[in-house]
Image (cartoon, rainbow, N blue to C red; front, side, top):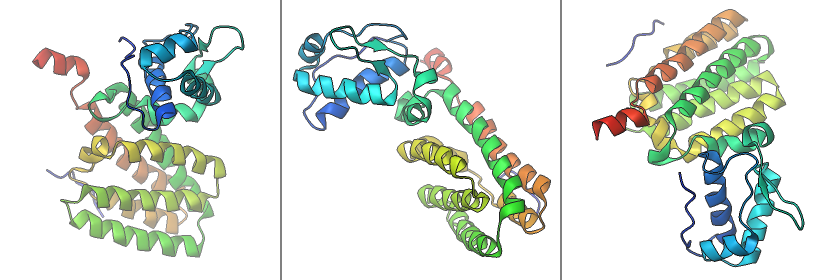
Length: 253
């Protein structure tokens, strides 16, 4: 089947007292991710943070403990709480927060994520060609049929994304690689939190690469499966690269 293209300053305003601890943690975490707070910086005292955020000290304390567990800060009893190098210390914990959400999505990070996805899907296809069982192939065909059906309903991007993810996650499962499953789970959280951001990557979506990959997997052709899925992933990278950057948007304004 051939494939053709189809036509900073830390915000410290008082916050609403709902899920208070996570709101405090999210405010501080966002300042770390966007660079308002740098690695090695000392945070204000708990008392100071509580006053400026309009919350109680226990909420701040619990939020800092949560951020420490995630690798964003280092809390020292009797000393200053310092910002850690999140990229080095947070690991996959950082991934769901790094991209941003809605209009605040960072274009460079989006491209980085999609380029990593190319490597993941290519390796997954190559490996599945040697590990997939007959039961795996039956499941994958059923999921591909569902993806074809979703692709025919071009006005329902959510259904299309869900069907695409179902196929890929089953493909990952066919590799038997548990570490890959953990990585893909972290990436999935990013997608689930930013479905509208990834929506236009499905414009002109075609399942031809999925069909080519599954055919190659049936034949035990790792190179063919890897190539087909890499081409599918690279298509999304190229779409993301054509998006205007924040600097471009500022020039237009």
